[in-house]
Image (cartoon, rainbow, N blue to C red; front, side, top):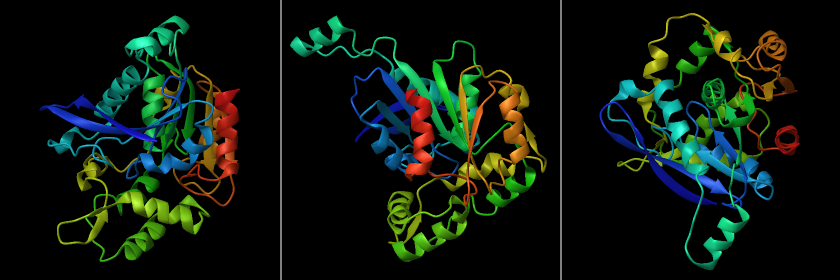
Length: 300
């Protein structure tokens, strides 16, 4: 795994975005992974390890999360900026590489990374960003995986998320931080102790007073707080997606209902749906049973 950065444009300047890569950087099959609202790129470590021998995996920290910059103008947090940053990333990771010397000559002769295949795996917010990019004319996304999100988002689920997003909580130890992580993300399902600790290690930041806080800007919650208390209807967007699409759903999810998933099979790209018992919002793609259907879909 290697870490890279690039810059995005916001309303008052530039911000730096961090992403991580797994696998051969010259592989012609690129899989871009984008996390959920309060999460970060390290959620995909298990998935990326499972995929790295067959493709190049690129995992983004969305602005305000993980290793990416917090925005100076907080009102910029929102999907227009997230989509613009994602498109910049797609342009970056699909650009030809032309190093010098004999190695570079060989790469140019064999056409390394020529016309790369680009797939998208997005959890929750990352799934919405993927839908928005895939719905555009001339989108480079060949196959889309939408993890536990859909074109109809219930108001009740947004209320639940709003209860913890944006609270600048402090904890006196990593153990107490992890305990809170387990409480608010219990719907992730039956993760192992190792997986919870992995998430805790990569979801916290050390503050000046030595305490532990969540590794995201609390102000990412501003767009959520400005929403009217009503369901969000994005069916018009879904109808514009044309690429083959796989939808993952936790059987107990409150963000993606069974009925919405059923309609996603009939409308738009006519998605294939896979459900996971014992899981709510959202499947974390850390176990073989969750990785396997994604792997099969992307490599078929």
